[in-house]
Length: 85
Length: 219
Image (cartoon, rainbow over all chains, first blue to last red; front, side, top):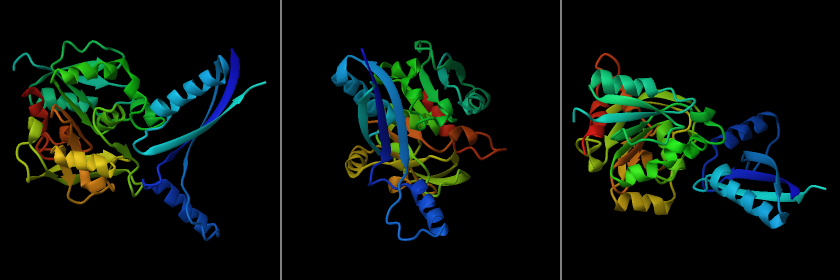
């Protein structure tokens, strides 16, 4: 078994309004940072797991993202997997 | 209908379970049984209510963790057998997360937690959950993440199959097409953000919720 570390990010789809992102954008303007074209927030999930090789690690992460971490009706996800030394 | 028993599912973080109990037992004289979410034996009940609240603290997404409870896993067969299930507020979120109803519920457009009476239009009486379509009723809402979202294909499917049960007259949360409640194709599952159980006593918020809760025991 190998150890893997993965970071997955989950974001609302571009077609879904992100009111929290809009609220942060307005605060950014108040801070004096202007000309922000878009600001959207999401979630970052860090996970460490064991698997027999990268293929199995990817299958596990894919299942987690697809079925649990993200709701694909409104969210997209992407992730990176690194094998731990 | 005397022996009819309605199951009220209790998750860690449910907080409208007692309100449902009061509305069903106290106002409508319908027998109930609390069902802990870890139980998968639902053979004793004839219908199920998924109450409002904050199951699992709304961690990850509202309803996302509750979806994996043994009880929700056993709902599939229960629903296929034609028995009735109603999900109110967090219960609606659990039903969409589980895929029993289409679409999703996310943060209110205003980011406010909205706690108000709401005027709603009944869009269909299919499934027997509401008496007559094109009639307005008043039910309270109380949610921070009640914005119903669906894409164009899902909306078309909802329209084509007459699945939109309730619409807001004054869309308070930014829901797609003002949608406040929907049913499944079979008509035996209803999910809605407003709280009918809080409108079952004329001394409180009116009695517009009585019909829907009473309809649980009518096939």
